[in-house]
Length: 603
Image (spheres, helix red, strand yellow):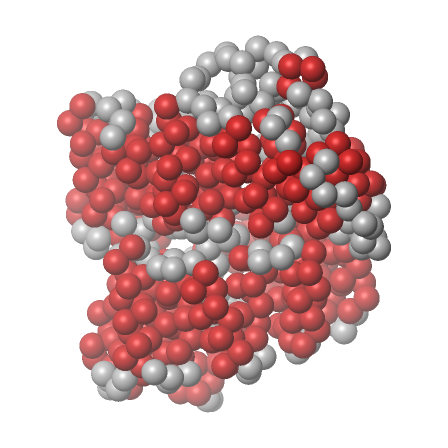
């Protein structure tokens, strides 16, 4: 199913410097009782008092202690509505976010913002919930208010900082001891990082662009260029980058954005020339820019030579890590294994390097070695992918109990990861022939996290995978009704219809609407090519499919492009496309299925 998940953020091919530097903001919540709330047993519902914030707060705390996060979030939201205390509404918001209960978070954050309209943190949290629910008008208003909020050390209207304990139910901020504090988020760049951690880049870009365009500071233009690039709008990214360069012709970060925009727009000569300029202007910051551009252009041998050239100028460990990753991405597992192993022996390796070594063992068919490698990473910085990949291997061995326990144990220790692990578990079950169990798992999760867009989206994906196509389409249509004009849902619905040859004119219309918002998104370009192919015009499909593959080098897009080439009569080119993609992703299911249909003997 060639669609993208907007609510479990992925990094588009062109990562960006400013946002990468800011990193993911920590979301702080202080009640120890929340440690087990996301996955604990449901408690029996108690009769809740109406209108008394103190009593409601007590009921909510009891629910937290019992592990009933849903009731706690809903009750705190009611308490916030009944209270005039901004600090209380703040706490209700953070509880709801911690519990991944977005309707309750919407109610509580709306109340908080109403009580503290100039609070930077209140506006940031409201914007976070708004983008997750795709309430763009409200998100834009909150971003605008955030930009005008006082910055620096100030007295937050909630009466506490992001790390202070919340007041006891019913106590005001003043009674709890208001302090001179610094808000959680104090810059538009930091706000962008917060929102990107929870929503897809096109949504964040749509929410922030108006305010940033009205901001004269050079930093705003730089941020706009990076957001536009992450949102797959290369033309706007290039325009913003050029505006930044008009202010500072030696702005290396702007030149890197511009170079990557040229890659997406299919102008390799300008991309390379711009990367070279950036390296000349700022050798320290832009040392690897040319190599990154060459990799994005799929000129892997040139990228290899450039990295080797840098060996005499840069720390060897950094160059070797990039060379190892380059070999892995090119499908040269022997070289990749050797380089990652050398990094590990030299002490230059990190958790990611060890994860790649385990992945290589898995791709080589050595499941025992792969599981042993993943096991060493169960409590590392890459614990989630390590456990998920180990679980997949265990399920392939029909060791269902150990596989699922591996994920459940992590949720017990890290309740914040419950939604992500539930989705991962559901996909593992579906991939191993247990789609009904996967759907039931997601249904149960929706009971705890009502109207959670990520869970609802993944449920639609797995319904399609299980062959329940019309149920999947109904689910996607319902989501789109609630999130009007969400480009990712437009693409998902349009692609699913096209893939099953249903209402092809409408499918194309949906996909083209998505392209208006994110014109260079490879998944959407792939969808456009695929619907044209399903309409019987394989030659017209080729341009979109080739461009989509050139941007992302995705195996499923390669399967579509090769099929269109084959049906058009260009069997030689189709074989080349499939072979290159298979070298990169030998386990890609749809690619292998496509090859089996057209080249059943593998020759």
